[in-house]
Length: 370
Image (cartoon, rainbow, N blue to C red; front, top):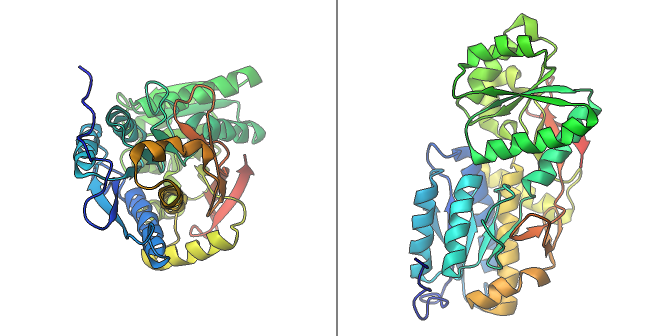
């Protein structure tokens, strides 16, 4: 049955504030650290928008809902937020959750600017209602595969949990590596204990192990097991999904968490806006901000510019995605359509492969730029 349209007047926000519905994972099993960074970036940008006069004199206000990495909970939150009359939807980190949110937003005619989820198939069909700040997974993970090849890794094992996101990542890696003489060996973490991964790695003769699993479980136990196995001293551990970016990773693993390359969506050097926002985020978070915090800030920056120019009408907001040209913390943001991607996509956000320096795990090294 088709979903009925939003009730009359739902495109207008209530009261004097312009409200943005915001989806963030703030409790387990969601990745709480990522959610906190995302929320910090969103909140900082909202504060700055309001300090600069808001949206045509009206304050911008976020209505935050915790998704806890639950797609059904996110879909229900979108329904609630749409009924509350939010002008647009923002946020979310987990790809499978953002996919559920995007489907409901599309059905309800609610503009959604996705902050951090990278799954290519964010919607089942092309839509004008959804745009995305984060790069598509196919783009970022190909960059990671190119890094592996450049580092001499041709036989790569992936420790993977069942998930559309992880399966998509494994497929992207396989498709990129195979024509160049590479092989991907999949280790099913639904059947293997972290300690059993070591024997599988020895048998597979892989030179790299990629963590396509949740954090902290089972990612942290896998890293500990591999690091302590003398047979695997030459095996590189990688985490393309970005787990080592967050301080929790270093606090749980210490030196074992260093030298594990991951994807992060930052330029080699921040410009003036990025540097200013980095300092403000560092003060707000009491730690170095991750790329996810910058994604949150950029999300509000884009939405504020669209709402200022188009008003708070939902249809006009969605129609404005292809005309966006906004200076974000990591470069100018423009949306376009890419092959196989059904949403408006920032086509070329900065992408790098980085790791934590074994000499100083709080410091990051840039290993490869896409």
